[in-house]
Amino acid sequence: MFGFEREKHLNVPNVLSFYRLISFPFVLFFILTNRESVFVILLIINLITDILDGAVARIFNLCTAFGAKLDSLADDGTIILAILGIVYFKLEEFAPYFSSFLIFLIIYFLTMVISLIKFRRFPGMHLYSAKIGAYLQGLFFFILFVFDFNSIFYYIVIVWGIISLIENIIIMLLESEMRSDFKGLYWVLKNR
Image (tube, rainbow, N blue to C red; front, top):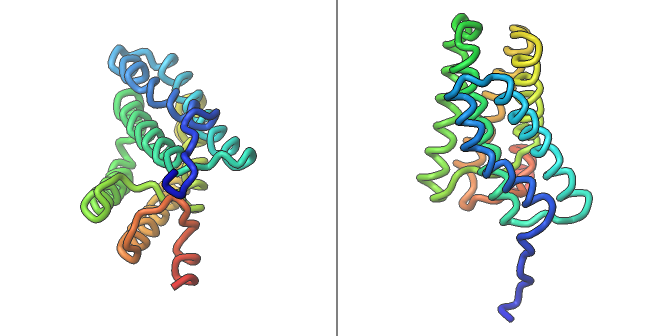
């Protein structure tokens, strides 16, 4: 009717992302009630559904702007809940690494602030570096809660995360609109 095809919001990737959004109050409840084992199970399920929603969307050509926004919102919520879980359950192990963790958090929230000011929405560019970083972070959370804290892997995750966030910030400063199909800074500069 208006010259564009209406996106189908009800598909498997969006249902998986929506599941993560619905699970947030429950995950938070298990953090606040000191039920670490249930928190860990739900966090792992959320991490797995995060991997699955993107894979299913790409394999079955179900990538939509709505799905990208929903996935980004679910990703941000999962990260925030994982950080709360770390603070609540693993603060003692993190104490010697707090300064590097704080630097990561400041840059993470700076990314959100820049996006909200410039684009009036949360960031959701789905950069390759961010995807790799998300897999590394997910693996780190799994190892932390199921096995134990690994300082070498922690530094790999933190350094990768900071580099990815800086790439995100640079792209936001260079571009005039927020899109979910940016691959990375190399491709942005190549297309200029």
